[in-house]
Amino acid sequence: MFNLFYLIDFNKKYIKNMLSILYIQKWDIRHGKFKR
Image (cartoon, rainbow, N blue to C red):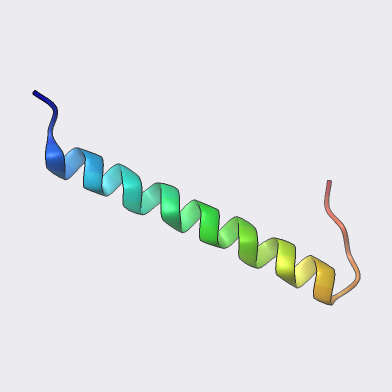
C-alpha cells in the first residue's frame, strides 16, 4: 500500500514545476526570447 501523503506531496511538486515551466515559456514569448 502506497503512502497517500507522499503521493500528494509529489503531485504538488510536479504541478509547481509544470506551472513554473509554463510561466517561463510565457515570459520568454512575451519578451521575444525563445529558450530551447
